Amino acid sequence: MRDQYHYPLPLDPSEGTIYIHSEEIAPETTFLPHSHPWGQLNMVDAGVVELSVGGQLFLSPPQYAIWIPPDVEHTSYSRQRVAYRAVYVNRDWASNLPDEPCMLMVSPLIRAIIADFGARQVDHPRTPADRRMARVLVDQLALAEPLAAYLPSTSDPMLVPILEALQADPANNDTLAQWARRRHTTERTLARRCQKALSMSFSDWRSRLRFLASLGMLKKGLSVKEVALELGYSSSSAFITLFRRHAGTSPEQYRRARGLKEGRTLE
Image 1 (cartoon, rainbow, N blue to C red):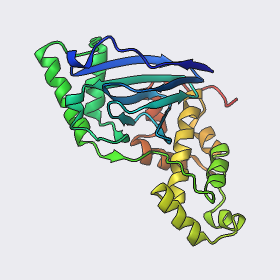
Image 2: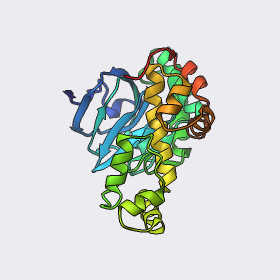
Image 3: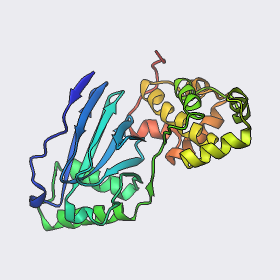
Image 4: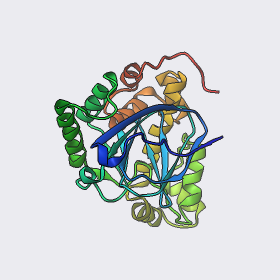
């Protein structure tokens, strides 16, 4: 495991409006606790980034971004190689963005602006046209609906063993009623605790977990059918439906858009 401190920006917040940084983060890399005078939008083009802010864990697949306001301490960890991008926003412009850490949906327009800056190797806007584009980018972020977390965690003693078991084996198809019997409670009580602690149902949480697990499998080169079987589905169609619901595209379209190739097998 590699420990790192955060990327030192070559630009002071008083000298610019936004700053864009891209890098490939090696597997098993931890960024130690740190904060920035900038607000920070954390994005990935491939892989999943994990950030811990104030004890809360955020996991973000490619179509979401994690927003951290200025001066908020955080740490991050990457299990796999991650194609990472960060958009740093100065304090004045960040005042229009959420004042609490959250997830934001990355719209096609947001991604297109960041991709354009990257293609032209523009790390911060210097021309009037680029400054206008940066303003559109931040305005679009301000319009994005904030989400508390894509895959929330909890310290609820009744739920922790269940969620840990599912994370260890996303293919587990046990029903909420079966888990309730093991925990010596009722299905209704367990459902209520899921909703209160996670702000979502048990089935929605497991669906999100499986979606995150599928991203790593697709990156390794498993076929859609193989991923479906590894995640406990009896057919590809159910997995494709799940993937479309979370990614807004099919697994094959997702793979092609990121240049991922089929052909390897799960280790």
